[in-house]
Amino acid sequence: MAKRDTTPAPAGGGGDDRLIELTRRLAAIVAELGLSEIEVESGGTRLRVQRAGAPVAPVGHAMPTPLVSTPTPVIEPSVVADVAAPATITVEAPMVGTFYRASAPTADPFVREGDVVKEGQILCIIEAMKLMNEIESKASGRVVKILVENGQPVEYGQPLFLLEPPR
View 1 (cartoon, rainbow, N blue to C red):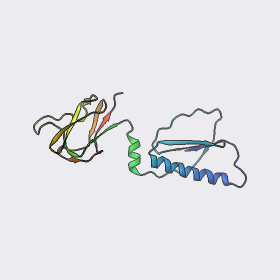
View 2 (view 1 turned 135 degrees about the horizontal axis):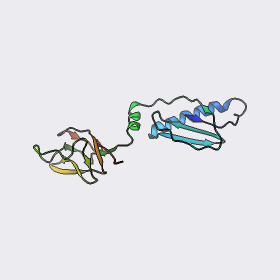
View 3 (view 1 turned 180 degrees about the vertical axis):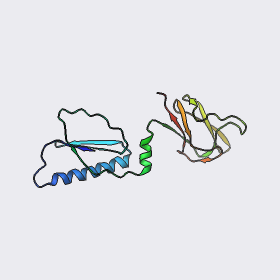
C-alpha cells in the first residue's frame, strides 16, 4: 500500500518512475528483513509498503492523502507463514541430540498439546553424548503444537514447541 500527498510531481513524469522504483526497493527490504511494513517520508512524499496479511495500523494525518496503487510484492509462502502466527512463541532446541517427551519410555510425557506451562517448567529432554538435558520453557503459555516426534534427532535451533502466551 502506498500513500503520498497531493503535491504535483516535477515536470517530465519522472516522479512516478522514482516512486515505483522506491516501492520495489522497499518491498525487497520488507521481504529480506521479515518486516510486516516499512514507511518512508521524503520531500513531501510518504510511502508505506506492507506485507500481504499484515494488520493495518491506523495512522493519524492532518491532511487526508489520496491512495496510489502500487504493484504488490510477491512473497514466498514460508515468509507469509511467519506472519500468520505472530502470537506464538517458539521453543527451539539449544543443542543437537535426541528428543524425548518423557523421562522414561513408560513415563507420562512432560507436556501435551493444550497444557498450560510456566516459565522454567520442563518441556522435554534432549539426549546428547549420553547426557540427559532437561529443556525448560522460556515463557509461560499454552502448548499449541509439539513439532517433534518422540525419539527423533534434533538439530541446534530446530523448533520444538509452539506456545501461545497468556492473554
